Amino acid sequence: MLADTVAHLLHNVIPAAADYAAAEDALSEAYAADSAPAAWEMAARTAKRRAAELAIAIDGLTDRCAAELGVSKASVRNSIAALCSWPGSTVFRAGAHDRVRGVANVYKHHVLSDPTLPISTEADILVVGLGYGLDGYGVGKFGGLEVLVQERSGVKWKFLGDAPVAVSAWFKHLAANGAVLPAQMQTVCGVQIYS
Image (cartoon, rainbow, N blue to C red):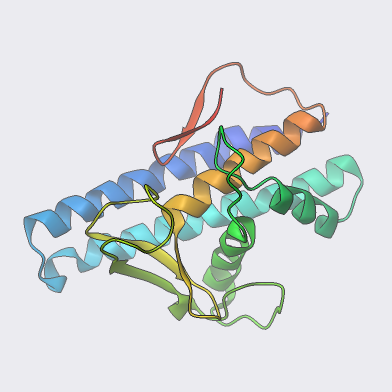
């Protein structure tokens, strides 16, 4: 049961998460070496692209899961959204899965008209330095540059926070629906999401 969804999770989502984490690390290294925008612009583009590729892989889970369970995509999305808490805790991260889905869709379409998505254009995916105080304590990087998602409301969220929470929600959802999951620990962007 749910074999296609689990295979996509393990063989596409988890590797895409590793690629994205490596791109964020490369961005930090480029910025640390030279903070002039010309020095880190290519690394920023790569991190943004890798974030979108991860978002597309995560978004692809919905179609597979809905087909295998015989339910609507909206039903699957609602279930995943309700499970978006920090791994190993009950701290809920509201909107994480929808922001990830928004990143996937805006990468494909540039401008979005879907009111269920919290972002509207590709310009809502930013690579900027946050400093302290934005998003949750301990989420993402502690300084420098990273990929952010800016909602229509203007609130910014770290993609390094949304991605692990969304993938963790998928592991929870699949386990609750009887999927056979691997015994080994899984991490996404340095966060242990499953053990």
